[in-house]
View: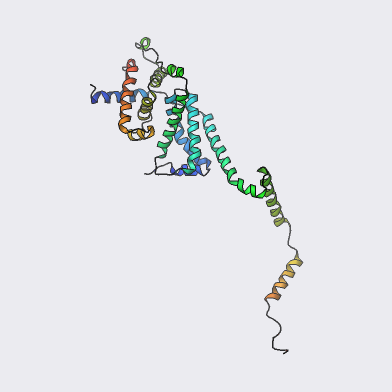
Length: 180
Length: 113
């Protein structure tokens, strides 16, 4: 299995700063986007991604190609850092995050893109974390089902079940946007 | 009972909705923090690689002392090598000694017997 990151990871493990910078440039935007969608908070997402990269720098010297694709491993680390943060949150915050804006007053007018984005984010935040993770990986990060299942540490069937439930819940929460 | 079309519709709709999410900008400060972690870790690794050598040179001393002693000794050695010329007399003596050692003996063993 060809992994385009293997050489960069080896060099970064040997202390090559340029390789570390190249790895960061290649993966940081996707990692941050994933963490942002999972956590719903920019500052927490930045901290989670920084933690994930710290783990990468710590393990790069011992990275053995062939076991798993590097990017899959990095996604998994980032996802676990997000779970850690979600579990540390007080219950009140989770309830706040689950609050979806009342769609009724907005149904009869076109929504601004930013508003719509905020509504979708809020609806996403209200999903249970495993469903949210499955939806974000497959629909936002465009990972295949096999890779997404590997990242989440579940079978493909379990992933498909999470996806089906998550999609249905998201669609019903955002029913007012269907025609938008 | 939901059929396959329903699932496909849900998938398409969710894909479209998530496509409307605004992109997440990457702040330059975050890049600096991440690379800062890399630099700190690399520095620590280098220090730990040097530590046994420094402990041999100056046991128990803080790391900078044996490092400074080693660097000082290297500098003095280099300066001596570059600045102190070899004397002519010394080289002439060395040369004649080497000629004498290389030359065949000037007597025969059996001559005086």
